[in-house]
View 1 (tube, rainbow, N blue to C red):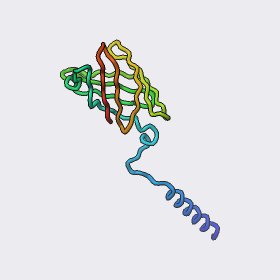
View 2: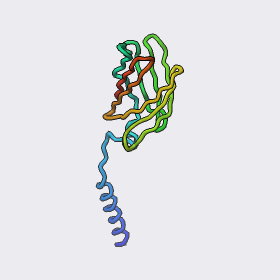
View 3: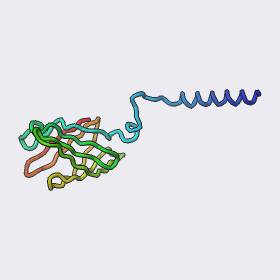
View 4: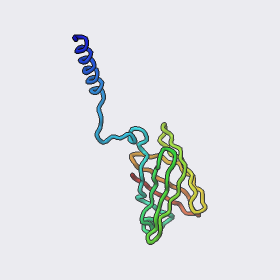
Length: 136
């Protein structure tokens, strides 16, 4: 009988020590611990040459669907939604994301770094510079 009581007490003490060794944040999730960049990023600034694209679009978004694919989606004001899916590669060491996507017959290849839930894209399109800023 004493051995059973001792075994139960030892198990209880071990469980308490194990649980006290870790702290859990109530706001944390498996996603935030493994791939924190997987989210939807809204375009907060979009300039093509001197033209403000946000005046013409209801939204421009990039959504990381999982750890291999992203979706670029946009909707013109008084228009329908368009979405394109692409593969991407994330470098854990540098935090850089590389993707190539085809939109309206054009292929775009871009690399960027997500920092503090934000990233920028910049590329020439038809002789004009496209600058976009995204935030989660």
